[in-house]
Length: 389
Image (cartoon, rainbow, N blue to C red):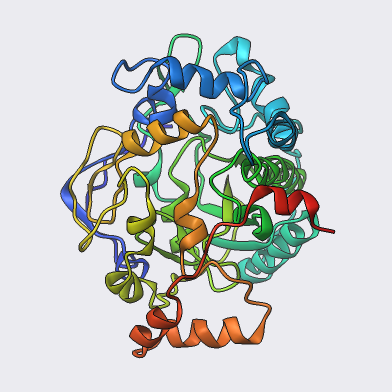
């Protein structure tokens, strides 16, 4: 399947806060900073090699609270199911869920279930997603602009065709909540267990929901970080709003989510983007940029500037310096989500007082909410997590 370049601003982009410029180009996955760490001397270093080795327990763990062997052991165990899925086609240069879509384990049923009411089928798909464990689910149109121009063959890190079946019409986006108490310990190897657990969870969920759709007689391609950029799809599916910290802020979980997606041709009704007021709050808040140890996050309004080739060209937005960010990850030998931890929207919205703060933050009284959030998101010592009941 070929995807024509589409540089035009679509009618529903405005509600999603998406601004595409005339020099837009689809992103090459080979330029993702994690892929570049495998081939680009500007990113690759002994520290990046040690970073990847630490996920196999091959590199000596850092000493100190949150970076003991026990912390790395839990983090790596949390990644296990995701690793099993991503490694099963490694000999073919396909790292499923990261550099290639997840290969189907079930065929498309030869007989299609009739779908007379796309809205009812959308409700059913969301129910099934919840049944399998997704915390959020939305549906948006299939938009080729956010597909990678090419994927990566992991045998030599060369470009490979980013092929999908013909006739796809929709993208199902699912959100998977990260453990709040673990996120509070970032930066630490222990906190990385929150990331790994959700990648393992989402691998199972996205494969099962895709299998359900294929059993109904329709194409369904399960996808995690592969194939295309999930954030534009998540925003256009009405799940949340893009923020300065490069994350999607949701009214249910704030920024504490990982996202998966399914490309499909089953007839579905599409959700609308829901502007919440996050953009206006981020305009006056710089908590994430202030807290970033390597100053990888931007100040000021969104721009179409590219700090380096790991940023998409032709989209006006807040864009991080991925090289600085990943360089700090390599130094830690683990992921960093300080920007998630300190975000004022990182709250437990099951509590009434946090829901009250959210209403204030998304209203014209956002400056009051910002003052109330001063000092929010302090780091919890990882040892306290281990001692907790």
